[in-house]
Length: 471
Image (cartoon, rainbow, N blue to C red; front, side, top):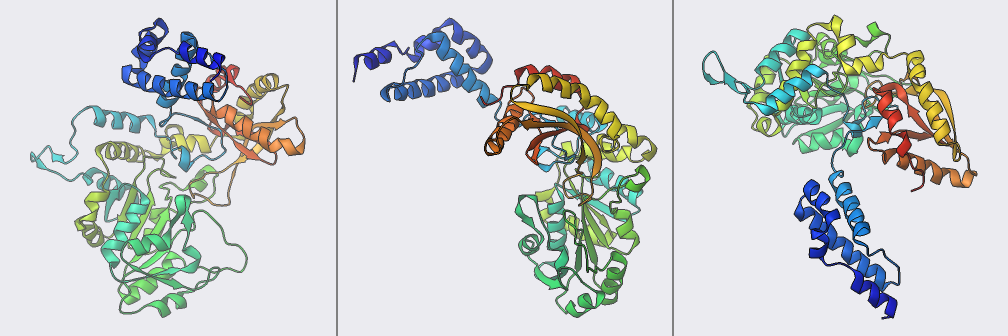
């Protein structure tokens, strides 16, 4: 070991000296002794390894405490954080899908900080049903005989299948054997629910006669799955709910429709593409319908099951229902959201999802224009910045193949084609490193910030001073 290396080793402070230093006191007050001590041990070990490798290190107390602060600070930010969604996908599964209205947030907070009547009947003073108010509201809004709720739509479908078709056959059109995000596949959920999948028809064409041919003594239900995240075009044929209901009822078995998203409003009234509603499915003869709470409904994560009273009663009696039930926070938020749907004429201004989808391109361009100018000045040495028209997606499997006209900011690196890919990744990473991370998207050799979902342009602008490319 050389003299300089020995000197650097001797200059490294002990843990006690570090923790007793003035710079460390601020860290101890903010993060606690255990966390700071852990980070200090890790840092000193890495510094010893660097010295052994012949690398110089700064052994000053202030420098070391600064690095410890960075370590514990990064660790404390490693969990779930608020971000600014400029990805161009409104219902972004990875970013938490629908934003809740204030009424739902307040109801959830109240349920968290106080005891509540989750399963308590005030009138009788006895145990009540946790889904009772949710069921009442859903039945009023949809006309269903009965309803229940679990923790997401995958759970709703699994519980329905396990209850009505355990050990029996479930025919499904081949064109509806979908895979959605996270490698969730309809065939897998059917198998794990204890049922046997019977594939019907072909990928692009399925007819009522195909389902009739698939029926047998072991057939429990027919399942129709909404093609929520893709579109088949060309030489196609599908069996709609009305035709499928006739097939089922001739055979004396239920028709279950998995809508996936499931809006409670006719989106066409707002000039948006049509999204199938549970009311339509029930009106065409479906016996049960399942859909999500955090997609086109605009609420918390939940799986909703609507339909015949006798079938809902069987589902509620399944022991798996307890394993899949919602907690009080979700129940409170969902109930508050459904209360809002009793006044549909007011939803345009109160439901964040609807407000976001209905923003016009001109409004978004006006919001994005000054931000584009700020970024143009900030990134003048590394990229060109342009205000552009773009298209937003609904996301989370809703309205596949459809988009909404939007506007945003396109950032194009000033580099050769070979280096563009790396610089685009650097740009995306730099925006993710901001105090409130900004999530955009890379497309066609540019980094695009779609401003449709941007709520607070001032907050976005204020943190651009901290934007560092290629750190």
